[in-house]
Image (cartoon, rainbow, N blue to C red):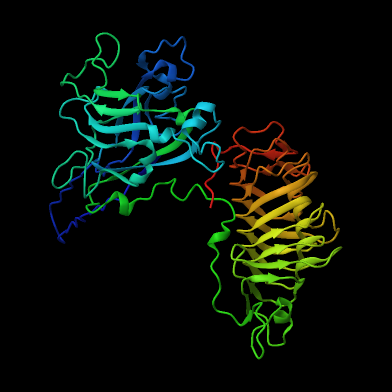
Length: 576
């Protein structure tokens, strides 16, 4: 990835005024032609010359274990887009590779920074030898060990692909520690890999070289004598200037994979005298790849309360002992906050005032256990502008949480909402819903037909719903074969940064949209083998389901209807 910043130059223009005397008998005209200003440039471009063991190069014909040039990871001078410094397979302990990266920053001297992040660190499958050396291999939330056994080093090179006497390493260690370096200052106002006092920027109009070695095992320097022009491979070969020893690598890294991003940044050094990489630059990928899921543990308990509910019955006390009593009280009015302490509340709650109902957290827990069957719900929202937060809500009737017809402005966040057993829902809305946000909740199905369903004018003619968003939630538990985890008839809605767990399987769909103007982006769909996203609004144009992760392997038939799912994410989004 490339990032370029060109600062504006301050150009001073001197105005020349010609003064003519009156009644002059002589005149003279001078003409200055071709006046011009030419701005310098910062145009960061990078090429790469790569070598590796032929077995490690995807698609290499007839490998024999030789150290060869890798056209797979080499390229000429470009703006970085899809080029990869690392793209190797079938690694064995003791395998290694070398690159020489050449950097061109344009005509101006430049400060230059780099950054890295690991986007995937997977055990993948667990062989018997791997299980013996890695007891955590079966942990579904565990990381692989390959990044810990891959070691690397970067040095300032003279362009010949060889680490030589007098050349200095400026960064090294296991791949797992690469992103811990944060912003890597190749050259800024405080430090430079070229040295100098004051520090030396990357010179403009020249080529600057960085050498890079990686080793699956223990990496140690063995610098060779200076000799620009001798080959790194072939006969005679000078080697890389490094030793790679895989003797200490065990079976823990078998089948593991690791994926990451590298980014470079340049800014002109002139007129930026105090620039630092860690203070004046943020890598483009920092903050761009969102975290997903509920994060129930991040809930902050409200302390500014207009009324309080607890389970302790004290004679003469001022607190309420049921949630409904606090809501019904004449002293509770619109705009107030009712706080509910941790404890179990066996009741059905109807929120018919514009209030904030705030528990101690779904993990603390403030638990509401629904009582009514049939059309009952543990919690019903029957007023506009309600905030419901910090509860563990368990359904007994048709829904754990129900929103009445025509309500608007609900905020439902940091709750765990679980359906009753047997085909019913965790959340159901009636029609004419508008401007709701469901965020940081866990919605749990219990053999549900629908875990969450937003009704509108498809099911209820004349009752359209609009702008009902689901952001940073987790859908878990189980649904029936023909059910959905989330179905929505709302227009102008966004389904973003959610997790759909692998326990959710359906022959119908995990998410069904009846309106093609919905946005379904940045979600993790885990390991489903059935239909994932279904467009039920035929003829209205494709449903935008871009930039989702569809599991380790995109399942066949994962879409139904007119759905646009390109581009796809190559790795799961990090979880909250």
